[in-house]
Length: 265
Picture 1 (cartoon, rainbow, N blue to C red):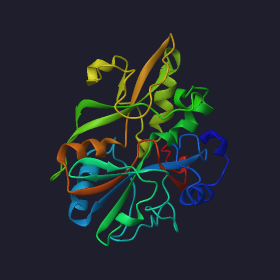
Picture 2: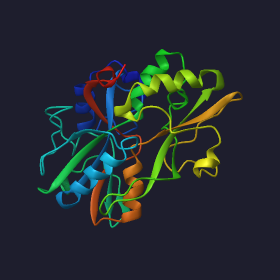
Picture 3: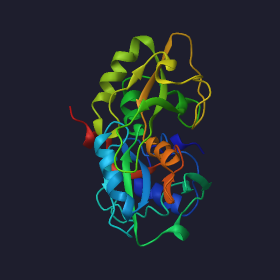
Picture 4: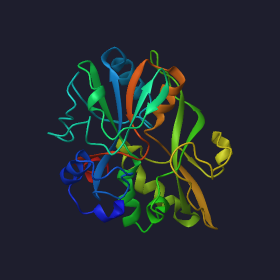
């Protein structure tokens, strides 16, 4: 089964399937029309710094929900869900190094942990598809390609680092439409941060992403780059906090709200 085969399944059903270990793959294409979220889980003593970091960098870090310390339930976007079990794959970080990629993090959960869900660009892909704009990684059943750029985020407390972007090749004539489609959704990264030459934002080889999978760029297509919710992982690698948990790139939390709930026009 491909992720897109679950396009019409409810978020609650998909989360239950993930919780039971029946889906451990990337989530683009699942639960069409519903918001997906990037995850960052930090000890309470770092949570305020991250909240300020997100506020200062809303393009890559748009906050959808924040949990109470020690409680893995995202009460705003998915009441009854559990952030320690309901993502297909996680990353566990110790001193800035990824030490494990488990399918649940119950054994790591602590009373001082705070979960942040950030908007994800998978959420606006439905709008692109409805507008007749191809989404290559869905077509090729791959994870979206992601790159660490030379664009520096605004620092906050202990947190600093470069912006991460995701890339989708768009036919040149459809680039303006793609900008308009995604600009409607600032809570899930909004309009692109860069269009065209990847080297301008520090990407040496667009066919060798830092995270995710490479995708084909066909003749007449332009690489278009959106801010990405994996940006906190770049900050983690830069700052090296003693402990934190994130989603594995592409393995998102599927939330209850509709993408349209976050559209501004």
